[in-house]
Image 1 (cartoon, rainbow, N blue to C red):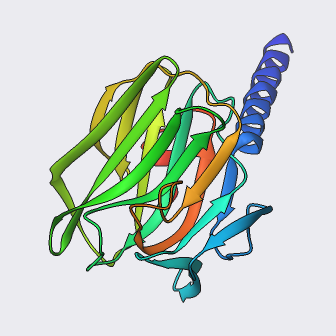
Image 2 (image 1 turned 180 degrees about the horizontal axis):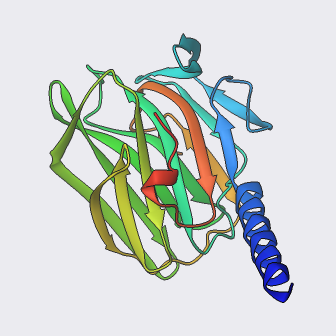
Length: 220
């Protein structure tokens, strides 16, 4: 009887932990230009809502399109996983295209995700994280991918190290002394200062305040 009780308690504890982690996740479906994740947006240019086989997404022209959301969902997270379901398109106007920037208010602490053009038909993933206690910049122009396809690009920070992934495959890793970001804003489709415009579509962004395993990532 005691063994059954202990087993039941263990199962209950596991369920509660799972539910807690799940509830803490924030998922933004990028299917509107007027609001994202329940937050009103500031619209730059004329990004367009498009239909895809996987659902609606927002397409950015790489010239002057972006959305600024008055929220930073990873604020307070000591560890995190940031995933973006993205389709980079060819013939962009800028070699480096910042498709996501999370900027802490009144500081230089930030997270920037971008694509870099390696060759005419290939791109590579680049990520930059800066907090009060450290920074990391991961990129490798030899780790290339084709345009016009959907990808899950992700970074995982466990408080001491950062890993960079494309479709669940680890591409790069490095050290990162992570201090949680405070409140701030998120720019989608360009840097917060309206530079480095992204050409392509974004369908979903997921913010998780823990270090996920690749098997837990969203499918592109």
